[in-house]
Each structure stands twice: as structure tokens, then as C-alpha cells.
Image (cartoon, rainbow, N blue to C red; front, side, top):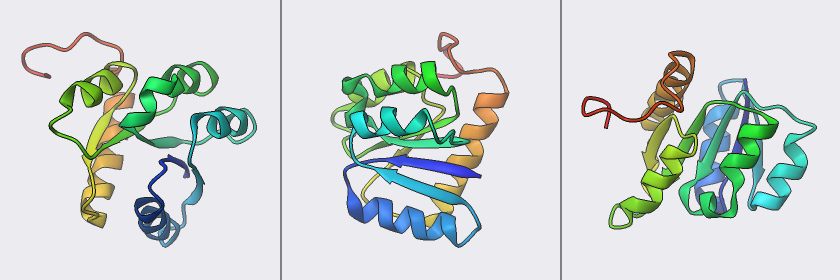
Length: 131
């Protein structure tokens, strides 16, 4: 599986890349929305892992237009839940908290994002059950 990690946090990206590459996934890491949108036209990932703070740059819309794929959103601020919620509404399929890295949590987030994307729940208005 081709995985694109879009996060300025090198520590997380390195840990996640090592974990994913050890399981035979191809990983590309980008740190900015501009780099990501330029590269995604040529390299079509199967999954995108993106930092929620980059959502304000329009990256989710760009990814959705160029390459609609399952997305795991990363957030480090539960006190700024509004940012994570906006990111989710713009195309996220699963949310993962930082900074703690647990390979089991990453694996579960990826599986859940893939399931949510294929189940057709993306883009639907949240209900009391799903919210």
C-alpha cells in the first residue's frame, strides 16, 4: 500500500514510516501542503495521514479533488477540538492523537480509515450515533 504522510513533525513521520515500511508499505513524507499537492498528481497514495493543523491550508480539498483516498487525521490538541472537527468534516476517516506513538494505534487507525472510506460514511452528515 502507498501511504503519504503530511506532517511537519519529523519525529512522528520517522516513527510511522519505519513502522509502515517494516510491513512492506511504500511511504512518502511531506511537510507542507504545497509540496503535497504538487507530488500527489504523480504519486497516487492509497492512504493519506495528515496533520489536522494543515487542514486550514486547503490540503483536504486538494487531496479530495486530485486523489480521493482514505485519510487519517493527526491532532495534538484536544483543547482545540474545533480544528480536528473541521478536518474531519473536510474528508477525514479516522482521528489519531499525538504525540504518543503506538504502532498498534496507528495500525488500528489505518484499518478504521480504510473501513470508513469503503463503507460510504465519508461526506455524510454526522448523526447522533456517529458523532
